[in-house]
Image (cartoon, rainbow, N blue to C red; front, side, top):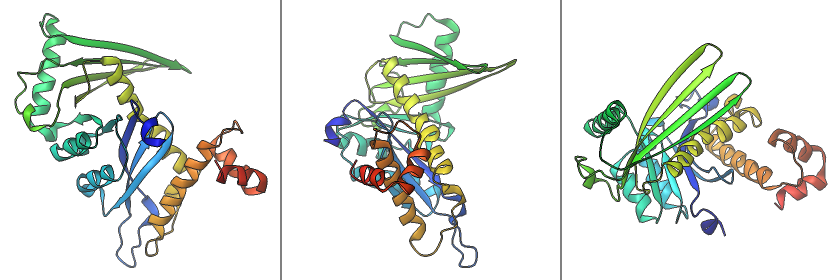
Length: 277
């Protein structure tokens, strides 16, 4: 049961433009698909077409309403950090972790000031949970640090966000050879005061870029597709997601999506196995 299997798991919602689906002759811009990606089980749960990236804000609640998300944690980048979207997620019985950007004005600034003050003085009496993880290979090291607190009575405007329980900060330190960089992000969420859980949700959201979008571009050549007549771009985007889900669900062949795709093309027995996955 999909609804049951999503309990406690992360669902990342993100948009992707099908770059070559534009049709200059007929004045059609490229289509933009917003997808819900179950990071832990590597499956696309649903998607919705928008006219352009700016319409993600209205498309996201419509997509959420169509999905069985009870018990899941929904992550969305700063475009989706909207009061209506937070309410829609809570009304579906799920939790949210929403990225803050400057477009949230004082909310972003107040969260940033709070955590910077905490790091500078480290004497703030408020209860803060923290967690750190390190990954490294081929001369690259990435250190991720997470902080979260539920003591936010001081946070102005928090009552406008349904079930806003915690605020968080994430730092990604990347070291490649002699080069290093630090990227800091801030979040509001309805989850409890658990930095490890925040970390899992944030890393899972990065997975929609690293897993789904990359596979669609490399294995299915989505960005090279020139399909653009009528509803064909949207229909083929749906078919690619269905194919991706079937190939991921079929686990007897321990190969990449691309290899499974090729096998299904020349082996009807394997194709039958994929279609019945």
